[in-house]
Image 1 (cartoon, rainbow, N blue to C red):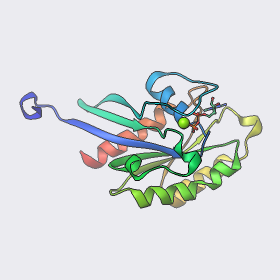
Image 2: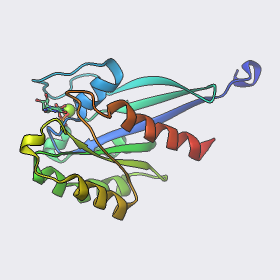
Image 3: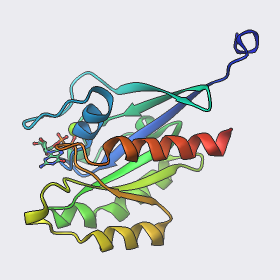
Image 4: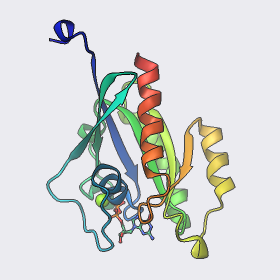
Length: 177
Ligand code: GDP
Ligand code: MG
């Protein structure tokens, strides 16, 4: 048991939400397996990936959930959100409409979550600077207004991917430990 081993274990459920094709599945595959797929289709089969971290000598398991593409049908179920203590709310910096959807995703998260959820606003595809449609300041401002962490990432070139997940995981850990 934990008591006998003297160790404590933590399991945190984290969900990734945002419009279709913003890069949710690739953020997860980059983080969990260091893989990127240029032609990724809707995730099939895998519901979540678990990453194990050591924080202050404690074993922390982050169970990161990916939608199976249901967001295309606006049908992300309440089961997806159940028990989540962290969320990455993702838009694509090259597609304005995905940034405009963030308020709706935050509402949905609020509706479905029971506890205080550590939230990070993620502007993904920051490698696409030449076709940027959302300024970094706009992301920062929205995050400040809504009380979210904020980061621009690229699942393609790995910029800030690990950092984004780990800030969320550490904040959850700080809140519960
Ligand atoms: P999801 O629908 O939100 O899960 O998005 P996917 O992860 O399936 O990605 C949708 C498309 O965007 C795929 O063609 C990916 O290769 C591409 N993509 C994902 N992340 C990035 C990124 O950081 N930069 C670029 N340039 N393309 C990306
Ligand atoms: Mg996906």
